[in-house]
Length: 300
Image (cartoon, rainbow, N blue to C red; front, side, top):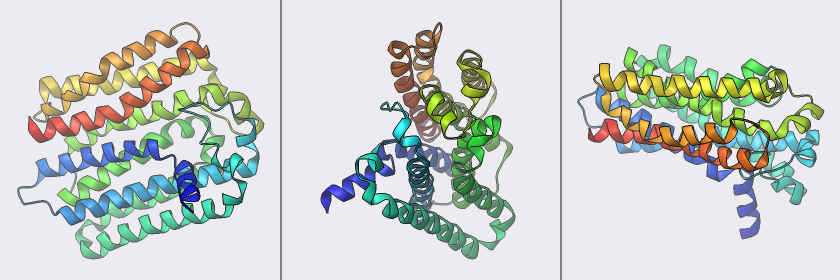
C-alpha cells in the first residue's frame, strides 16, 4: 500500500508542485498589499489546496494520456522532462491515475464554487479565471499540445491564473499592478515547459504533438526562451525603479541562474552536457523567482 501511494506521488510529479506553492505565495503577497483587513488563514489554505488540486489534475491526466498513446515508451526521460515513468513501471495504476486526475479536477472546481457562493460579488472576476483554468487542464494534453504557440503559452497562463485567482479571493478586485507582476510567473512557467520539450522532440512527433521546438527548431525556440527571460526580468527592473511594489524586484536574485542557463545553451541546445544542467537551472528560476517576489512584497 505504501509503495502504491509513493508511486502515485510519482504520477503527480510532486517535485514540480513547488511551482504551485510559489505562485500561490505570490498571490497571497499581492492580496496582503491590497487590503487593510486581516487575511483569513483558512481561506488561504483552501486556495492553496485548490491550486494544488489543479496542478495534480493536469499532471495525472497528462501521465494517463501519455501512457495510453505510447509516448511514455518512447521518451528519453530526464529529471526535468519526459514524465515520471511511473506507469511504464506500474501499468496497473493506469485506472487509479485517471481517477486521481478527475477527482483532483472535481476538488478544484468545488473549491472555486465554494468561494463564488460565499463571495458572489467576485463572480464576474473569478468565474472566468476558474473556467479558463478548468479548460486548460482538460485540453492541454489532447488538444493544446497539437498547436505550437498555444502549447507555449498554456502552462504560463495556468500558473498566472493561480496567482490572479489567489489575489482575487483573498484581496478583492484586481489592480493594474497585479497584472504587470503576474507576467513574471507567466513567462517563466512558459519557459519551464518549453525547455523541457527539447529532449522530447522525436517522441512528441511520434505521438502526434506539435511543440514549438518541433515547429521552429531548437535554435529558434531558444530565442523564444531568451526573449521570455528578458521580458520577465525587464518587468522586475521596471518595478524596482518605477513601482510602489519594488519589493517584488527581489526576484532579480535569480537572474544569474538564467544567465548561466543561457551560457550552457548558447551553441548546441540539444547537447546533453549543457541541456541537462540548463533544465535544472530553468526549474530553479521558475520556482524561486515568484517566491522571492512574494518574500520581497511581504518584508520590504
